[in-house]
Image 1 (cartoon, rainbow, N blue to C red):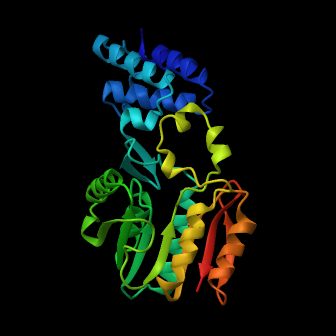
Image 2: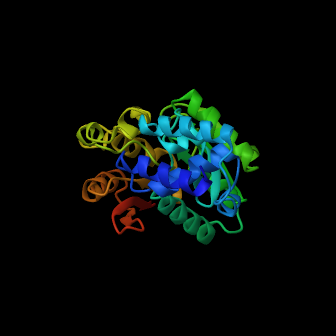
Image 3: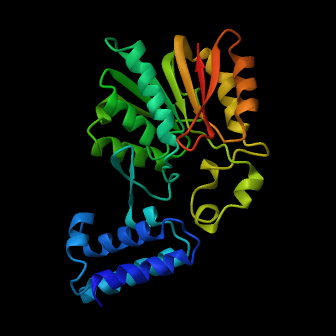
Length: 283
C-alpha cells in the first residue's frame, strides 16, 4: 500500500467515530508511525508504506477506533503555537483556552510592561496556560496549582520543554489557598461542564479524559463559586482575573464575580467562534 492510500483509509475509519477532524487525525497517526513531520509525510505520499510502520499505524488506528483521543495516542498536542506533552493525567488542551491567554497577555503587557509581577494559574493541568504566559511574559513569575500530583509533574515537564521552569512554582493544592500573599493576575480554567452535559459527551471525552477536570457540578459553576469566594483575598489591587467559562454561563458567572468584587469592572469576552468564553474581572 502506498502512503496516500493509507492516509485515505485512516481518514475513512476515523470518520466512522464521528470525528470532524478525521483527515488531520489520520495525518497525525501516520506521521507518528513514520516518525515524520507533515512536510516529509507529503513528500512521501507516493512511496510504499514500510511494513513495520504500516503495522504500527494499524495498531494506532485500532486505539483511535476504540475511542482513545489522538493526542493521548501520539503523546502531544499543539497549542498556542507550541507543542505540549499530553497524558491522561490532564485534560487535552482546547483552542478556546487561547482566548484566555491572549487576554491575560494583553493586560499584563499594558499594565506591567516594565515591572515584575506574579500570575496564579489555578488548576494548571498540562500546564499550557502557565507555560504560555511565562514564555510570552519574561518579567512574570507564575505560581501553578493543582490537586493532582501527576498533572503537576506533567506541567513541570512542559515547562522544562519550553525553558520556563525556573519561573514557575508548582504547588499541590485546591484552587487559591496554597498561594501565599497576593498576585497581580489570576488565570483559571477550572471544570465548568455541567454534570448532565458531561454524561452526554462522546466516549473520547467521558471515558478517556479525567472527569474531575471537566465536571463542574449541576450548573457547572461549583469550582468557579469556590474561586470567587477566595479571589478577593488573593488578587492584588489593580490586578485582573481571567476565568474560562461555558458558553451558557456568562450571566451567572458575571453575577458571582460582581458579588465577590463589588467595585470591579466585570465583563465576558467571546472566543473566536463568538461564544461567551472568558470572564474578566478588573479589580
